[in-house]
Length: 300
Image 1 (cartoon, rainbow, N blue to C red):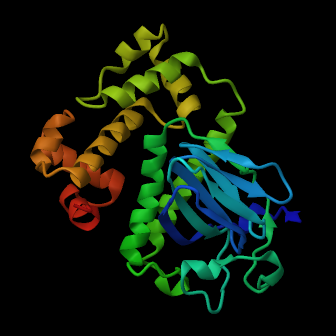
Image 2 (cartoon, rainbow, N blue to C red):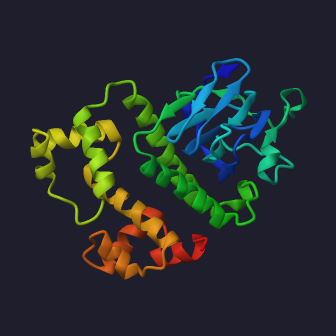
């Protein structure tokens, strides 16, 4: 049963956030989650199999929302692994005694579930499935949550009230993520303007260099400056300048983690006027300086 509550009581609280790789042909479930959960498929293909609703085909860019208590099974295609990022959260914090690790918020059988841990299903208008309009941008939104969670909880233990105020940054990043989920849901109820779709593809491919004159972009689309801004924000949820900078920072993130190039070289590669300008924007978007980010998260 889904219950609609007065929004005045809503203050989403992140329990844990993680990146999960699954192998070819993996099958996990049927299982239920005790709290709501949000997923982004980064790579690979598969399916979510439900007992009481149509199955969902998974591919890169699929955004999933799974209500607590809903029995589901993950199936990965046999020819490719699948990777996703997920956030387990509560619409409002509720004390859950005995919950210490992520698996404590999962149950492999609905018949054996612990009703004391199971949240009520609340309907706040998030669809069960969406397709994101830019994997790189949405990956960045999820990464800010998972990276901040790993910094606050390096042993990946589930967060609770005792983690306050260290959990504030995680909560803030997640609220921004939820905001974009709602905007995406509204946008996908309309038809996307093909001019904006083409421009987004170009921005992601060419992301480097200073922000171009917005009037130049508007002119190429045959639009006034104000109409271009409004149209772009309607279809993406972001301003053109923010989206351009997000694409540049995403590329810089990848270079910090996968190359030995200096911060100066990376800043120059993506058109920043100085290392200071690059560092300032990177810290604003990622919460840490480039050198700190590389030290904390690189794998090689």
